[in-house]
Amino acid sequence: MGHTFFAKCNDCRYGVEVKEGIGMLFARRNVFNRKDFKRGRKTFLESLTKDFFITIKTFNLMEDGMHPSNDYGYEMYHCPKCHHLESRFFFSMTGRGEQYTPKYRCALCNTLQERTLPNNWYYAFKGLKKEEGFTLFVRSDNRQINWICPYCGGRKLIFDNSKYAMWWD
Image (cartoon, rainbow, N blue to C red; front, side, top):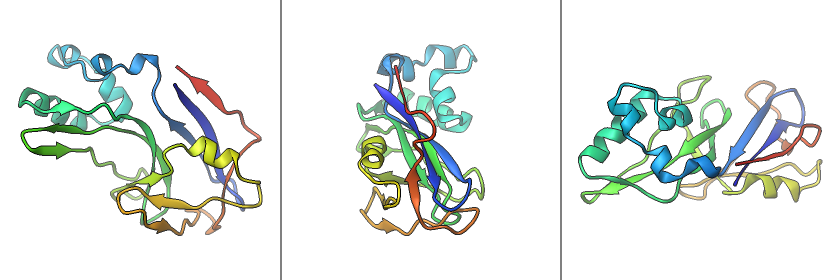
């Protein structure tokens, strides 16, 4: 089951809709279904990644013998240059002694983004008092991110409880 909630800068109107996890339609056979790709139709994977080139590379790797792992779903990504946050669809492929993980670029400045910790943002935010703020970590090396709002320079990211949190399937 996946969920959506909102995080925002404590000092301005910058905010981000955070999606995390997967729903019932996200079965591996649906996400990585090559039939639509072979027929020239938009695939479920393309609608999740919002990137045609990631989709092409993924299906070509599958043709070459690589397989998607069981670890996939929406996660939070952070831009190390402008600090913009985005929910992105994470997955990885393995086989032939190789691994492929898609790389995403920031929608604001086109810099490569980094996956962030914790894996479950919703519960991490819910456990905080509004005035405490939240610390982000880069997933690959557990390095702390000194988050700075891309719009006002504020340094506190908080859970926005004025908007709804939603569970989805």
